[in-house]
Length: 307
Image (cartoon, rainbow, N blue to C red; front, side, top):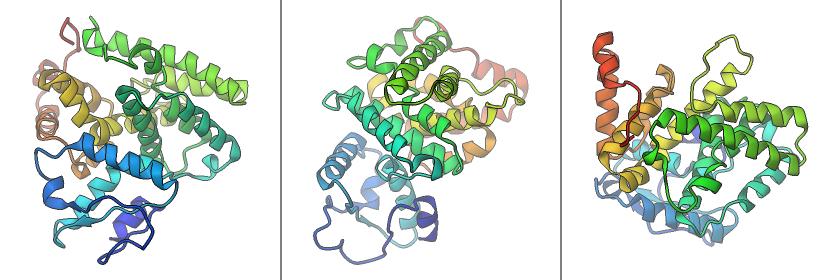
């Protein structure tokens, strides 16, 4: 279980036995249930969120399975729960960041399911960023938290992205509007003008990998892109599939895979993906190794009324 401790340094991993007395927990999660194609991710997330909010501190999650399957499943489960682990580095252990976290939480009406999903995704993207780049500075961490804040205006009650005539244009506009909102909100939180501008610039471009590798912000932008994309796969893809259906999900998966460098794609092997999503990932990976003509036909621009 050493891998779990290194991947999630804020948690304690213990083999065997019951949780400590007095530590809140939910019923034991069996690996065979977790692996089931019919596993209810929404119900699981709701229980974990409620447990974390009730505990207001440490809580326990027990996973049961044989010694061969347990390490793999535990890594998948903990990745799905990482938004609740509060991993930080030197840049985010400061009171200023704690204040921003509180303001960010206050923006979200968690009684609304879509807002709850966006809040969880924001925290998860932040945690992915720190897994991908443990030395991430304050600017990219703030960008990770606020990268989708525009949805609080446009998609708090119903999703509309599938109605866009051009998905790329829709996402770029979402990013630009979100950058403006984030800068205004961060000003209220006491973040200085120069830092707000840098955060806004990352958010404004976070839907596309950096075009200029010599851009001083290229590394932060790439990690933000990948953290956002991996959060879609590890946390959001089951809900996306349930909300939009298989065809829309296929388009989303192809779009999101294009945001990942080869090294980041390797993480996909360690995630619990819905079978439909896993199939598209495998298919797209095979296509990416095919001749250029076949690749272009498979992953061309996402446009059209159904996009």
